[in-house]
Length: 312
Length: 310
Ligand SMILES: Nc1ncnc2c1ncn2[C@@H]1O[C@H](COP(=O)(O)OP(=O)(O)O)[C@@H](O)[C@H]1O
Ligand SMILES: [Mg+2]
Image (cartoon, rainbow over all chains, first blue to last red):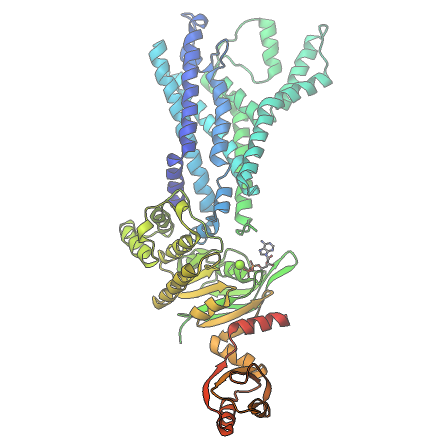
């Protein structure tokens, strides 16, 4: 398997694709820093906790936050690293030659997946490192140890989230012989989850509990609860919730209804949760993403092991 | 007698209802160049895939170099080289880099690899382009690189699936020569083709495949006799100054079926090898015999004959 892994890794590093993705991700990092330095002064006072994490979460008037960039780019990077991993071997006529070498069949898929994941990790870690580095220079406040801890977990979750999209892309690259079909299907699924899922969720919620100016608080919370639950079908939402809870320690609950009530009733920002509590909060989201990634990978694995190696 | 390298018994493969390979019994010895001859769809590739352990047989058993490919695929694959029908390489890598990857997959010691690649590329005539990207290669060059890709692992047995398709005559000759030199190096070769002249040129033994069955098998010589017994001989003769009526005299020889063509160079069809009788008749008639050629049935006719019967 290591031979496959190293070869794929070397291929990635030499590819234009990697250069482009890396450039895109770095651009996002620099934009995020720009946004942060523009708006951070207005938001912080001497008493503000977790100033350093603000760089990641703050959004400007026109530009969204770093977190938003990440939730946008991680699927794109993962999909572009994985969508043709198997189909390209097929169409180039390499697969049957490869499989006639004395390696186990799963070495091919494992080696490819792991090399893709390694590249993804390198990109994510570098980008976060760029933001941290530039952040240190611009705001001049070093992160506390808890902030560092939260950032590390954030990086890990991002990699796992990327692994899910990559596993999905690899699966489609096995199901579809044509790389373009595989690319479009995966991107299509991502667009559906990223843009349309929350719309669908609120539409369903509004159909169940229509809201107007006379609505009671109970109805409002019920509506929010429905749309929140449905929205959680989308891995994008799961990831969004998880990283928000981690990097905005004030997030006390991921249940939108409870959040809504507490902000409505108390009318103030909540006190930050300790790290362990935040972790506990994102635990369901985290395990769901891991499960999704594992399911996609398992299906790919089985499909690939059973597949006829002849393309016709 | 050489060792048995490939042995199958009643090997069959069904693809949802379609029988691609039907009760195949093969025995191939070490050192042979065995031809799988048959039209497209005859089941040659399917047979190879089962011998490699890349496809599960529906029934029957396979042994390759003493191992069962389905049970010990890694073992078999380390002893066997395979040049697939539509071979491909990593187009952005050079010829040498592609071979290096194969060497790594085979766990070859790193130190020896460079020299070995150079030697093998020289053997297949690709030394000049060792550091060129494969996307600049012609089909013939890719096929030769495919053979190099087999040679790098020093196999006991090599499967070449239609290595000459889509290549110009010069390229075909190159490949046939490489096959011969592989055989000389002690590699047992299974050469898959639907092109008779090529199989005839390099193979020691041939098996004719049709619709998943092995319908005839044997050394090229014996196959010829088998069909000739029930078939016909064609004898071409050249006569300097034929006397009139010679044609009829030849026609009267027992066993001559037909005589056609001009009197000084007729073509005789007969049911046995009647060369001496014909020669005697001509000389006795007072004409002089310049040349005589008995045309053997070649595989092509055998091949056509079998396919007519199918
Ligand atoms: N994966 C497959 N699924 C269904 N049928 C197949 C498959 N592979 C081969 N076949 C069929 O099996 C038969 C034998 O094919 P093949 O072994 O490729 O023949 P050859 O190599 O002699 O041209 C053909 O009729 C082909 O259509
Ligand atoms: Mg074939």
